[in-house]
Length: 251
Image (cartoon, rainbow, N blue to C red; front, top):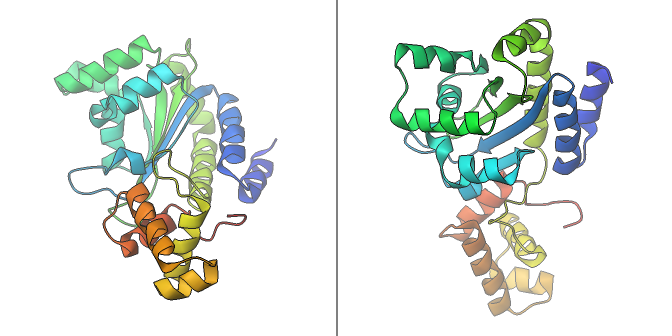
């Protein structure tokens, strides 16, 4: 598949599963066989937001995901810190340079030790442009187990621009596709009620439109607020819209 063919495929992908599966295969063709994509729309000056609101796509095994994400090692990962302050591509060679200069914290060294145990010591990180300081996305491209950083740096000189282009286009496509966060998903009734609120309908209007009692509509909205971890229905509508859970075909 040529790059043009691949970009045509990406532009026409109908689901995250379809898109991600093919992208993983494409990156493996270049020697990057372990990927982790992350995106948040709820970043602040001091936090990336609630991890339950992250868009996370990865083909890493559960041991790596549990350590890096669920146990919070990502907070101190040197390349994630780099991604938060930069855009473009970064070679993991800079980690070795920080080690030599003594520029790594104790927590960062813990992350590096973990990555080395997981044989994740060579790779690249691509940090995407963000239109808002509240948004941030990046992808970690881990090299195959026996690949050295020197090997990947040589490969990047030849194919780096193409790899950056493909990852940027995939990132932009991901932003357009529905995503149900594991701990933030809505039922079809909750989604429908929020959609009607987004259309400016009152509770009584929604009850008539959905063929329900007003109290039942209120229940669906209350449960939607709880699922999305927000206080108001307006916040629920906004968060569901940002996660592309609103007005989904087939919902």
